[in-house]
Image 1 (spheres, rainbow, N blue to C red):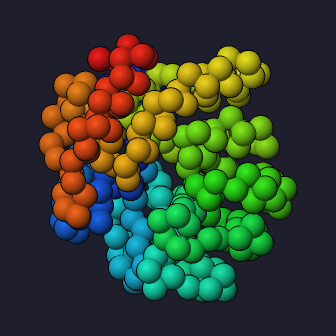
Image 2: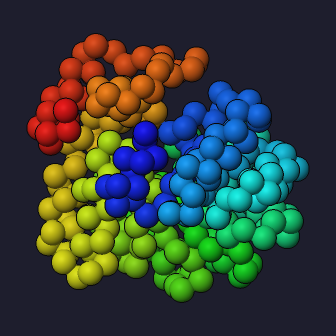
Length: 266
C-alpha cells in the first residue's frame, strides 16, 4: 500500500532498508525479503535503491551483491559506524565495494548517527570511481555541502539527507532529497524538488516552509519512531518499532497529529 501511495503521488525512486526502514533490527533474510518485495511491487515503474551499508566491508559486499542479484537499480551505502575508520579507510572501504558490484552507489554521510564524517576531499577521491555516483549528505553543514559541490561538480549527484535543507542544498546544484517526510507527504516533497529544477524557486522554498513544521514534528524523537506513528495515523498498518526503539510519547504524538491536521493529511 505504501509503495502504491508513493508512486501515485509522484515519488521518483524508492529506497528500501534505509534508516527509516529499521534495517539494524532486521535479520539478513528479512532485508533480502523486503528488497525483493519492493522490486517486485514497483515492477519497473520507478527505480528501487537498496540500503546495504554496514561497518563490515566483507558483509556489505555480500549484501550488495545479493541486492544486485535481486534486481535493485542502485545501492545506498552508509559510512561505517561504531568501529568507524579514517578518511583513508573510507576510500579503501568504498573502493573495495565498488570493485565488486556493478550497480551505481550512493554514499550516505550521516555523522550524527555514525560518529564519522566524510570530508569533501575524500568524496572527491571516491568520485573518480565510475560507479560511485551520488552522495546523500546529512551532516547539516551547508559549508561542507558547498565544498563537496565545488570539488565534485558533475561527477557526483548530491541529495539532501535532511528534509529541512533540501532547497539550500539544491541551490548549489543538488538533485533532490532522500527523504523521511516524503513517506507522509510525498507530493509536496516531489513538487518542492521539481519546482526548483524547473526554475520556480519561489514555489520550491514556499513548499520547504510549508513542510518545515511537519519535518520538525517527525524528528521530535529519533527517526523512524515519529514517521511510523504518522503513517499509522494515516491508516497504514505500520505496527510498532522494534526494540530498542519504542512507540512515540503521547505528548509528542499530539504535536505530530496537529501538524498533520494543519496540512490536511488526516
